[in-house]
Image (tube, rainbow, N blue to C red; front, side, top):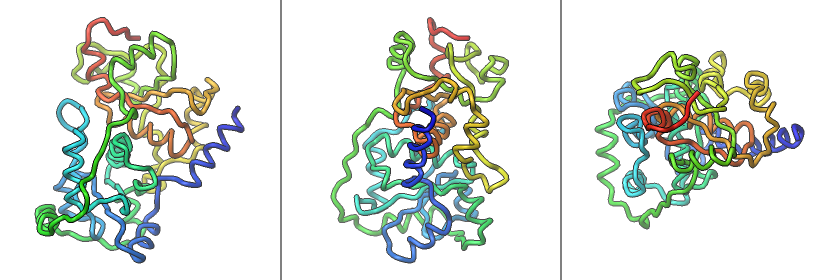
Amino acid sequence: MLARLSNLARKARSFSSLVSPSWILSEQSKNDSLIVLNCDHPSEFDRGHIPAAKPFSQAFFGLKGSGGCLSERYLEDFLQDTGYDSSKTLVLYDNKKNLLSSRAWWILSHYGISREKIKVLDGGWKHWVASGNPIETESAEEESAEMNTAVNKIARIQLSAGDKLIGLDEIQTLLNEKDGIFIDTRTEEEFSGQFLSGNARGGHIPGALHFEWIDAIDEKKNDTFKSEKQLREEFPELWKTHPDPDTPIITYCQMGIRAANVAFMLEEVCGFHNVKVYEKSMQEYLNREGMHIE
């Protein structure tokens, strides 16, 4: 079983959604099919970004407020404005240790955009700058004005929600059927209930494993994701369960942001196929009466 998982992980990495700064430079020099999206706050975009990048504000994917995902129509409108069509490839990056770009990747994938057409710059802005690559400082307002001046002639984008984000009903079904592996990606203090994060109660979903999202990041290597070998060593509890590659794995945190980072890692680095993110996570679960906790 472990050998099979390793083979699947190698297969996943043979076509990974993770790319390097040199890959972006090479692809940009060949054609104009890349759309680079900066997933940080607009104020950070203004201070410096990858040349030709467009701002993909955190507001687009639910970093504030309820933690709920944006609608298909909202995302369709945004992508339409960027000039996206099926011939283009989206490249996502951030300055938050892959946290926001992996969340954006998960949202776009949830809405049906092929993983062949979505990339994440491994290590993001830190990796880009450390590699000595060029930057631009055009403001988000100027960039948005340029995006809106051209009349978009491409066909209307049609998105459809999938099942990479799930809600409380699905969580209850999985718990009742004792199906799947739950992974809590919050801090140890949140997991244990010492820190409530504004919730009515503290604790975690019964039986959940704990793996804090930041432990997937190699801060000594420009905030790139750790290798599958490193992750096996740091998160042995997962592999001790002898999961099948298609075993349901559900990640959660407080609002679905950190959970998406670990879910992305499980799919794109470790080769698991059936990973879901509990979208509203503990912001919903710990404030809903009758939900069991440990």
